[in-house]
Image (cartoon, rainbow, N blue to C red; front, side, top):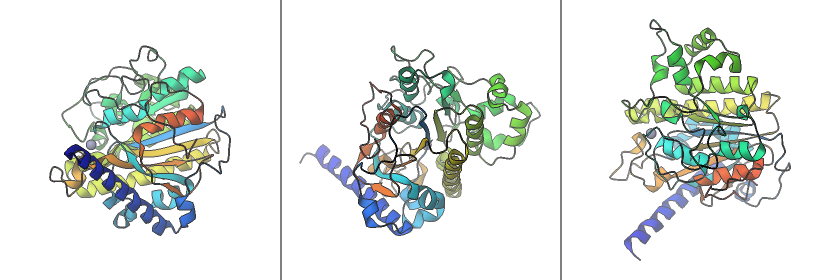
Length: 389
Ligand SMILES: [Zn+2]
């Protein structure tokens, strides 16, 4: 076997071992039976797909976590909500491979287009392929207010809309950057918000100019029925940028009720600072916020019983054992652990407490949502996940 093939085989073995470990962990942590865990056919669906009222909420983590701190026995104390509240409601994909560039904006854009985008992660550019928001709005003739993104940093301001010639041009999602909203609403004397405003944990000196389809401060009041003073007063009570994002998400769900809502959390990526305790806090907070978003879905009449939720990190983090990596802090090596992530799918028509451990890819998300919501992602390269559609 040639060296390249050997390396690939090893990567497959590592990813399969990770998936096996996650499955065994969930089985022992939740006490669910092997039968439900091993089931993998698409039988047992509860509602028909493509109902016009069906909605979807996608939660991604910009900055995944290692299993040592999450889906492994020693990590379970950090994710009680994912394990005990959300997993029993979900189909869990234990082996989601990301074969693209491991930078947060380009990887999240790839999740949103269903194609491994190849642009410079640190450039202020739109995705090259149509986004899920464009397929959704164009195919289903949905208005601009029916698709929204809440994103963590200025670098994401163009994620709502591609520059594809058949799409783009006003067909995408509105993008809200809560931190930017807060920064633009602050007066010179404002204090107490600094902890919410850092734009990127990876490149603290990178502050791209805002341009593109970004939501403007003056529209905040009319859309979210939220005054600037209420917004800033509430923000001062929040512990992190992700709390601020979820606050905006709740207002959006209440006041606008978009059918397609995408939120990217980013607190975990504080790991780049090298402070392990803050990385753990980020995981614990993300775990809690995911459960809060799911609870909001259940309690909002516009969403309850007709909304599917997907939770997935954009990718993982480096292995401790790879000589080029340094464990939890970064995602630089491209090793199998930094590429083998997971995904939870919840809501109507999705079987509960099921683990799928066959390998799937990050770019399968958009085709899967296309089959569920009834649009055609023509340029996406992934495949609909058979267990969900
Ligand atoms: Zn990062």
